[in-house]
Length: 170
Image (cartoon, rainbow, N blue to C red):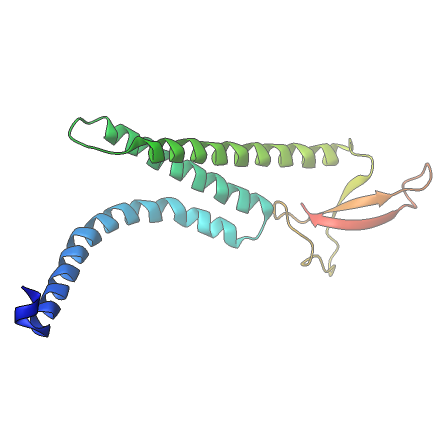
C-alpha cells in the first residue's frame, strides 16, 4: 500500500496516526493529569519551602498518590470485562503505602526529637531564638521556624560558659 502511493500516502498515514494518538491519548491524559495536578501541586509548593519537613510531606503525598492509583487499578481489575495485570498494581499499592508510612514516621520522630530538645532532655543540644542580623541562611532548615538548634560543648559542670555551635534552624 505504501510502496505504490509514494511519500504523500506515507505522510498522510503519519498525520492520521498522530491525530488518532493525540485524540485517544490526549483526552485520557488530560483526564488523568488534571486530578494529579490538583493532588501534587501542594506537594510541589511544599518542596519550594526548602525545609526537611516540607520534603518529607511531599514524599508522603507522592506515596499516598501512588498507593491510591494502585488501589484504583486493583479495583478496576475486579471488573470481569477489564483485563489488567495485577502485579504492577499490587507493587504500586505496596510501595506507595510503604513510602507514605515511612515519611509519616519520619515526620513524627523528627517532631518528637525537637520536642525533647525543647524540653531539655537532650543534654548536648539546645534551642535559642535566632538573633537579629544573624546569618542562619546557610544552616539546614528542619521546620522553617526561627529557632536555632545548637550543640552545647560543655567541658565542666556549668553550661553557661559552654561553647555553642549552631546546627540547624528548627
